[in-house]
Length: 349
View (tube, rainbow, N blue to C red):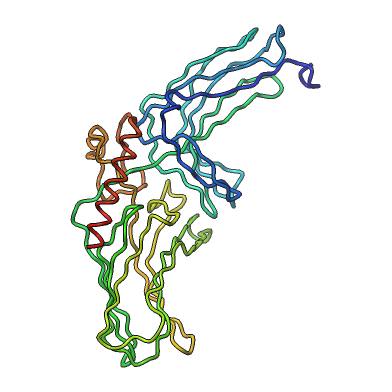
């Protein structure tokens, strides 16, 4: 009997179409390690084949059906018993019966909607995966394979700057300005700090990029803050009328796009935090939210057309789903690097 380990079993493997030419992307696992998976985009077809190898040749495998699922789900770490599925598609590969030899089965999920970006955070994980199940009487044989999904956004050329003031009456008056409020993942934050009044002894000033992950709702809301980047603006006392430039390159840091109210389960927001420390170790803060987005490659006209159906102000909040076949990866990678170099040079000017 299979219950005692004597019955027939099988090993399952999944091969994706075109995987030898498909880009991969790294994503962090729950234990902090980084793993690479094949990269897909919203509206892209997910297809391939499932190989089933019987462990005992010449012996049959009775089953109640073989199926493959494409699943997008959110896992909240404080509520591990419940997986919140926002995408669930099923294809029947084989009807109930017997397998007497190895099998190779094709599958296709055409133009699959993938509204959110893959994400692993402090308290939540959003993942997409394929799951093949051989349904058996006593214990199913299951194989899962993850993929990574990136969401793309475009913003209009008009990208307003941020101007703010920090002040303590009759003691301190500082103005700071950042060149824009929306940045792509490989962008440069350019700004200036103006000291209009300085009557306290400031010994240190830095700019921080803070990531805030919010999970849950109401009384069960959890906020997790993480300082992603620190940029020392000055070390020493400024004088009135002094102006200090800021230039912070984002490409060296581990960032994700801003994610707002994803499936009503979680959000990820980013803030620029200006920190001043005086000689008595008192700390002064001024915080401003910024938007971070993943920029689309300009070379793919078909995906440009798909993006035109999106509201540019939408981020990874499922506001729409463009349809595309995202291929020709080497050309796209080269073009993206060239675009980043040009944009960073323009920002530096």
